[in-house]
Image (cartoon, rainbow, N blue to C red):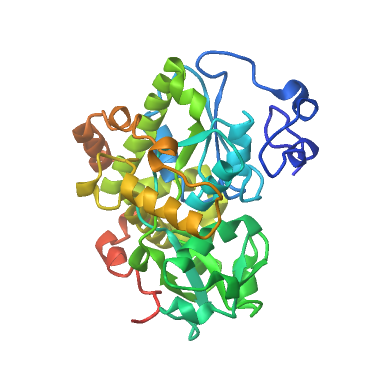
Length: 386
């Protein structure tokens, strides 16, 4: 990567970001954002090094349906570097305004002094899973002691360690190998490790790429949860920026609501944005992928105050566990780093109107042919047998 965005952060500058996410004045130079209210441009950064995935479907369908109209400034989506911690580093230094880290990478940010807060919890359930070559899978993760788990980025160990620990695994006996993005799945297929980290949605995409695995599914077995939207804590204290964040997150919430009612339309919106992704996985696998993710993002809505709501008790359990694992050295109080301050405003939209939009959407013939109920019935076919 030679350039991150049009604002011009070079690879050399990015590498001057320390493990603590601190940039010296000489490294930042003249690339800092000018002060403007609320933002000169609002940039969201991916944790994956790519945008050509279905994971961000609420934004693309929300953009198509006009749910982000009326924002004072332009919004931008950036893939970022494939380094697993870039999504928090870039927000911390002001080169992006919102990141989408896993809970483990968020904890990395807190451990290294980054003044970030989780403002909108996307992944209410645990999206993460472990892939195995067919016939080698297990539902007893303790059998992974002495084995090798493949990762796309070394930073992903912060995802897997707590996932294993809550299942009773001695993580000191597990070996991790960074097999690179996007090749860690093919490395597993080639026999270079015993398991590989995966997640909901990616399972369907891997099938589209000819990678047939069986899975231990966190969404079925884990008490943990998945990625969240983080911002600079200071932005939540700025009334103008907080008002902008409320409106911006409302666009995401409306996109989530629309896709819940019409998942096929949301897939179409992503495919229109990324034709190569469309050709790689097609309508049926695309629908499978988005239904997997809707399950994670929605969680048990009867227990949530709306899209993005944080379960503070669950977050506290997570922070306590990673403190026990020494993934963080200081205890963290969930209410200090997670906030539901934006949730009421983000969910303050006409739900009936969004449902009507979803019901009225005219699907292409290829998507009309997809039986959503049948796809839902087979969402967990790749799970390791009980």
